[in-house]
Amino acid sequence: MEFALLTYPGLHFFLKWLHVFFGLLWIGHLYYFNFTQGAFMAQADAATKSQATQKLVPIALWWFRWGAMWTFVTGLLMLHTAGYVGFSLQGDWGVKILTGGIFGILMWFNVWFIIWPHQKVIIQSATQVAGGGQPIPDVPARAARALVASRTNTLFSIPMLFYMLAGAHLPIQMDVANSTTYYIAFLILVGALEFNAIKGKLGPMATVKGVVSSGFALTAVVYLMMELIL
Ligand code: HEM
Image 1 (cartoon, rainbow, N blue to C red):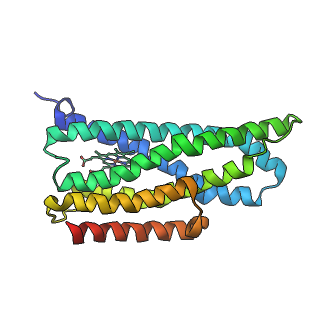
Image 2 (spheres, rainbow, N blue to C red):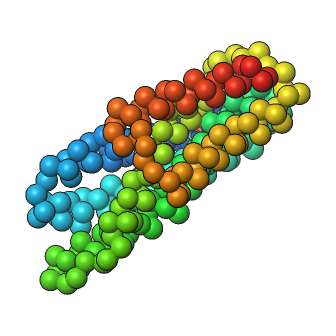
Image 3 (cartoon, protein in one colour):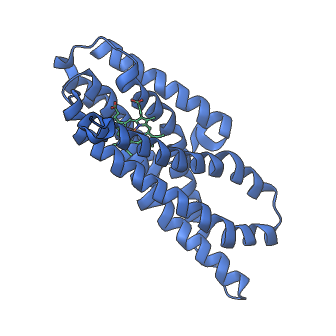
């Protein structure tokens, strides 16, 4: 008797299960920050805000960033195990998964190298002020940068999920011989958006409605690029 989980397809499935578990943990917190906590902080008085920044935000950020890390790790492992279940990065599955994966990898980068470093300083400053000390002067600038990165991740999460799911579940007829042209166009588009995440402004991402509708629009643009170029 053979146990399904002890085969390569079983291992790939097991990783996928963990991947979706960690993905939920990560993106659930991302949406909590962007849809719920932001609106709460905008109404809260200074003392409540300080308490939340010192006691609530660090816990939420812990689950958030480790969710991101393990989603990323299990995703990379699946890029490897996929070869054993008949998927190839050179085929149509690869184009769809790499499209979703590039969004996901940029999001992981934004969590660990932009949002978390700035948030650490914001939490440190709130703790200092609560202890009678001075605030750290560049906190408003750091909060603004972390917000643009966080909103960009919310923007990316919408096409990211579309392409993660499309990989195995949306058959798209494509001529992968043109994939270089597609990847160049796609990387220019996401590169510009990621540049904006690092240096730019909120623009339409300033509101929840704006960022969600932009996410659907971005999904449509990438989908059309894929259908028309490939
Ligand atoms: C961080 C970078 C990421 C990488 C490198 C990555 C990679 C992958 C790969 C290789 C698969 C292959 C599944 C298959 O077709 O057999 C996959 C599936 C999946 N990923 Fe990701 N992923 C990432 C982020 C995310 C995030 C943030 C989510 C959010 C929940 C997510 C959700 C999913 C889901 C739901 C599937 C299953 C799709 C199916 O049913 O086939 N991924 N991912």
